[in-house]
Length: 284
View 1 (cartoon, helix red, strand yellow):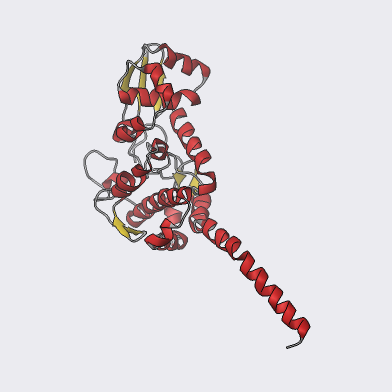
View 2: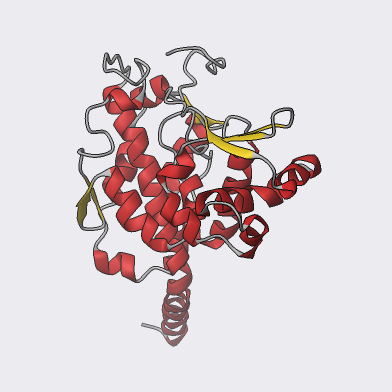
């Protein structure tokens, strides 16, 4: 081998080695690329084209298969990347749970006919392999994600229902996680089907989803909750979480602290965009 060629090969090897961390970083950053593509194509404003996704499910299935990484690989991730991994895993598994049963025609009491609630054990019994563990969706949420100690994650999970947090048209990523979680909270509390203010009767109606994860929400409320020190822990948590994101007149309503809080009804209808967005009060 000529001297010139040897030098060229050496330079190439050095560049390859020095670029390896960047290559690895790019590979890790793109580990959610398949799901990102699915969300971008099939999700609009939190609603999902389930019919089309069921037919064109290859990318979603490949992504779900990729979730069974080794615990060691998961442990090597940055904390925010690990948190994003679990949120994306949950949302992807809900999508697959729905399309595996789609179209849903259930007859059980308490849920609309096409609701994810009609799928037997969808959240509590069906197991999934993720990062070396075999877990239900409820276990992922209450044992893994709740362990992050941040109530904002409650609003990052798309549960396949209109009443749940809005499923984003993009994946969660570690580098943007804080901003994405703040956006998820803001979007959730601004929806009038989650928090409704009735000034005439001085009533604030909130979705029961808040009560389902009361412990986590209560434990992550900051000092703003002291404005409502006479309230129950959950009421303080909801008011403190909503306050920064509401309109001035709504903040004034909360600050007066004379309102009565009550729970509304959770909307269990499937967040299905097939055939158009369901109208308010329309059954499925």
